[in-house]
Length: 288
Image (tube, rainbow, N blue to C red; front, side, top):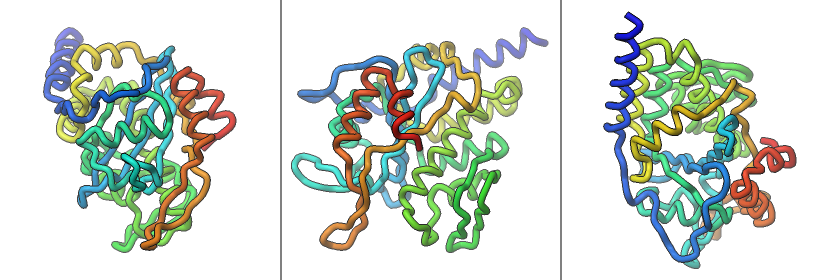
């Protein structure tokens, strides 16, 4: 019986890795691109139904592979693209332009990119039977979904509403960025729990959802996925940590669109931490 289960897990993982969609436009080379640093840096993005980028998150896996750091970049972060100012949310994810912009902002190389379909939040939380997140601000969406303050369980449509809450929350982008980190952190932790990995039905469902909702760059080969899965050594929730993004305030464009202003000095510090695998020091100065 144990042998049969072991074979199932291996076969399902291999099939799942082979079925993950890959897109060679997510990572592109260009002159002046930052050199690779210590540890690994991932860019996790999510498209909305309006073809805008809703989630932009930097994920740093340290060289020892026993800590993960999450830095959510506000979707309305005001940046320069080829001499033109724009918001991150207005940069398409599938052209390499978003990668280049983020690398330019922080001055650190992004090793890989994962694009999560907006339904991915729903699919993964459903497959996991819901995840627990801490909500620091109570709110209610226009459709009537209420989120109380404190620890709450979300899954499916409530998870989608949680990260895209349209209620008039103060500092909405900052709050939603915090919620996005919370959901990603909760999903990662629940996927890695022994009871999840040891349950064939749940494991099968999670792998199936990953292949449906996640697209990675072509450099994320089956071998790379195996290496990552077999070497990561997170002990628990204390090893998945959030840090502040490089921002200094909010403003608006001439047309009245809200924007978040970049803190260039903090961005340089973040880039140095991503390159040198010193995110623990960065987070001690700029905790989320």
